[in-house]
Length: 184
Image (cartoon, rainbow, N blue to C red; front, side, top):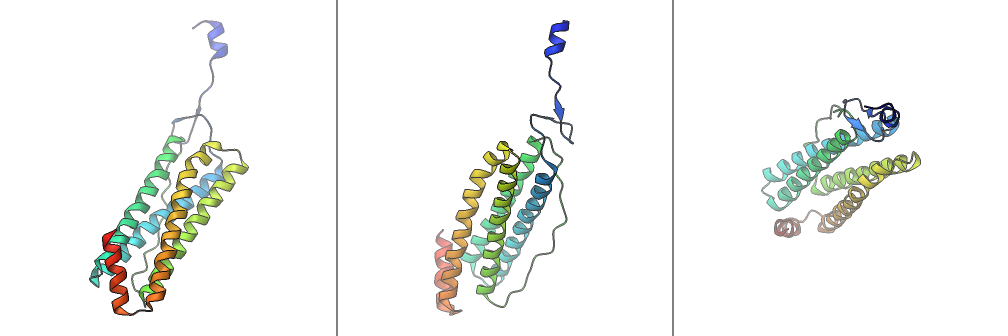
């Protein structure tokens, strides 16, 4: 290499995993990302637990809905883990609590699920806000479609909660909702 080429050669930054990175990640943002990843993984396990609860009661429409939600949350966790790797970070997996497995009513269960979705939305919005404040455009671009999908999911749970509240624990109404969910 000539002396001129050495002067123009850029030093390449490496992330904690040893992977080349174009823009390092802010530590505060990364800590918040790890917390969000834990929330996604917990939602996956919680929705799987709810799937089992409905399976045990032969409400296969509700069960199918929650199995799909469980799989969706795991897909979200994959996306976040892959994003960390792409940004040269080590993926940190925090411990997740055991899921809730007993419920007094379907309404309580759906309310709990709605609140989890609302918390996930708030967490994503916080990540977006932090990345915007520190001018991490890569993260904003990554989060845009995820926030859009999360907002739709939150709306879907609000709609389901409204139906279940209206059903007022009447078995025939719950069976109709179950049948509607089975068609999806």
